[in-house]
Amino acid sequence: MSTGKPPVVVLTGPTASGKSEMAMEIARLCGAEIVSADSMQVYRHMDIGTAKPSRAEQREVRHHLIDVCEPNRRFTVSDYQRLATEAIAGIRASGNLPLIVGGTGFYIDALLLSFDLPAEDEEHRVRTNLMQRARMEGTDTLYRELLSVDPDSAERVHPNDVRRIIRALEVYTITGRPMSELMRRGEPRYASTIFALDVERDHLYRRIDDRVDSQIANGLIGEVAYLLERYGDSLATARQAIGYKEIIGYLEGKVSLPEAIETLKRNTRRYAKRQLTWFRRKDAVEWLPATTNSERKAATRRLREVVEGILQNPIEC
Picture 1 (cartoon, rainbow, N blue to C red):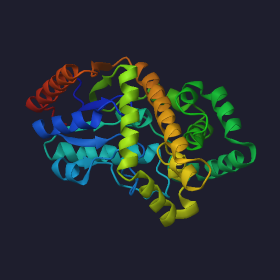
Picture 2: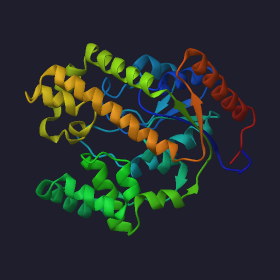
Picture 3: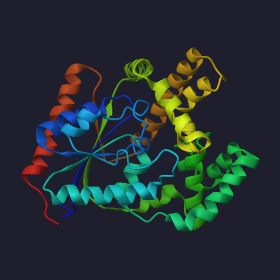
């Protein structure tokens, strides 16, 4: 931490790898505050399907960037960049350490690197045009376009994820540069130490299946039904989110419940695979084996060691 920049610690990895549990343990032991880097946990009322920390956990450890937006509103990477930067400044002002936790790679890159994304007023016209094209020409047309102008970003999003496809095309249209290039060329904003949990693939997939079963048992169907009743056709975000779009298909009578659950598990596994592809391209990541109980204990010790070291030698800025 000799750069003179404010220190932050990042804990990332694929979905269901156990990031939140480990972060809670570290925050309890060391007094850190958690800044979520999850693109779905920013939305209110989307709790079960996003594996959001419980109210009790949020009372015990302060969390930031959770429940900051209505699910029928648009929340962009630039919104996250701005709010998370403000949150980190506030955490540091209180004498605590920011612990950034989540698996949304775009969010983590936008936070750690100093580069400007188009503001909301700049992008409205471009986005409206792209949304019209998606409706008329199909999402696959926009995805092929993204592949041609920004293949790195295209590899990191699902071909049906129209929201992120449009966002990457917005950035390219307005700036003339691919979003992936902006992120590569950005200057570090913080002295960041980045950890990622490394869980063996078969074990990770079992964790994903178990979590989906638990979400169903704990009321995911009711949560999705509530969102549909409250927001109706304006619920654009949840209609695209893993964990919600599959259950919406069941509630609208398009598939059976077993089919929806199996599709949800499959889509989550595919998402985890895309996350791993993203993170493994990062040179600065320290991978922590976290499959067995002994590995997880060792990973927690390593993370605690770094956090306590920073807290004992804070950098003033």
